[in-house]
Image 1 (cartoon, protein in one colour):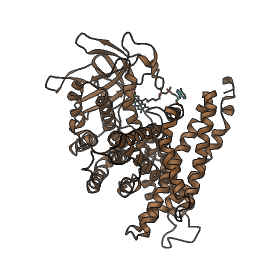
Image 2: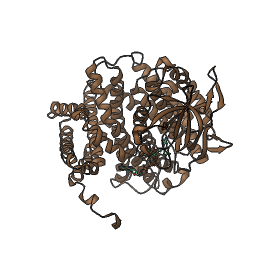
Image 3: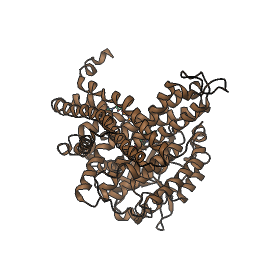
Image 4: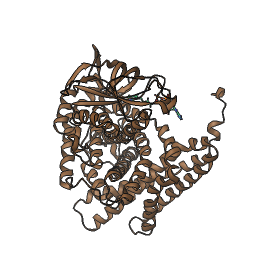
Length: 596
Ligand SMILES: Cc1cc2nc3c(=O)[nH]c(=O)nc-3n(C[C@H](O)[C@H](O)[C@H](O)COP(=O)(O)OP(=O)(O)OC[C@H]3O[C@@H](n4cnc5c(N)ncnc54)[C@H](O)[C@@H]3O)c2cc1C
């Protein structure tokens, strides 16, 4: 049973109550999005997700996409849902007004993204990719390309893709072979084959705007010889309507483990007309604008799946009768008690709940920083926010998707054997969530990005944007009567993180393999400390609200219990990663290859 109600109260909590003291100061340009408007948007989005997207989640998984006569059709109901999505203005929620969007803050946009990914992850990919393509085009495209393409993408009439991967190269894009030949009119003819292209073709929009990485004839080898091109499926006429087919289309749909209603295509570009976006040989940098947006978005996918997995598991745990409670019968009129009475089932439910609340709180902090990085009034705050987003992007991508997948697996476990059966609907979550750990740069690559690039960047400036508020908070609240104990645990984990940072910096300087061997453990530890900081702050807010006699006692008490569970059960396990980090690379790298 797939059960979903948008967690609007918790979203409002992290948006309005938790991060008011984040130090980024005034963020300008979002004055229209006050509390009432924000709540109304969240409620409308929640309704769309529950009533339109959720009902076609499981059926979309069962039916999948089809490729016939060179075009892809999406499962039943997707076209209608996409029409409703666009009519509601959701495609342009975070897009600048200049292009016809609503210019909503990222902090709000990410909450709506979370809902979409909970209700229907496959569906969420179509507008998600368009969003990322728009960000890259806005940052690097010529004025002419922007004027022509962005308004139609902002209203959802046209969609976008990112075409990087080829059969012989995914992580190592320096090897890519697709070519782009310059033409006299300033355009390029793009030729090559791509694989694994999300939303590569479909029937939701009248045109598809592919952003393709390719090489110019005289390009240097490796990543320094990659340029980016905009290649539309249909060449637009002078009046902006789709005209001739551009010989850019799907040759096959990949047969995947999950995410079956998202069309992942093998694509052929056969002398397809395109235009360069950004500068020659700087395509990978330009694509990184899109990939950084997408990496945070993929992290949110993990959270989205984690939330629906949790809600579906709670529903079942209250309904399924097995065994009796160890503390005395709870359902005397029934043949057994509901399984939610059992501590082991509670362990799973509380773990999922804490992961979701922790990730949501951290995502709100990162999204506020994303907004502040563009729009904080003070230049110093903009810089600090930029540093923080840079540090946290790989953490959000990798940690949220790992935890989202773990939650999906726990939901299957809560359902027992029924969870393994398709009709339960929950095994779909585990299959769907799995890809988020792989695409947009695998989670292993995110960890390398964190330790190899983000930590040393400008002598540790990124890290300071995070360490400073955490250490200040610990100092200020160590003796706090309400949260002092939690802060003590946070300090311990933070200490382990600081030692780990020093260890990696020292050993990694002499031997980069040492830093690489520690990277994934380090990312997890950093992410858990960040969530711990958010939980400690949440506990502080909750205590204050309860003390002033808030009418939402149940909400704030539950927040305290979840925070306590996180500190009791989850943070100590993450803190132990320090032991793994300290152990170094030896036992990992010692075996000769032929011993495997
Ligand atoms: C459903 C789906 C949708 C996708 N959508 C898109 C899309 O829209 N556009 C697009 O361009 N691509 C897309 N991809 C491709 C995806 O981004 C790649 O699969 C991913 O980046 C990994 O590349 P790869 O599969 O070639 O794995 P490889 O690069 O071969 O990696 C294999 C393993 O080796 C590890 N590894 C590789 N290099 C290193 C290293 N230097 N250090 C440590 N470990 C390393 C990886 O972490 C991984 O575990 C999609 C893939 C799937 C399955």
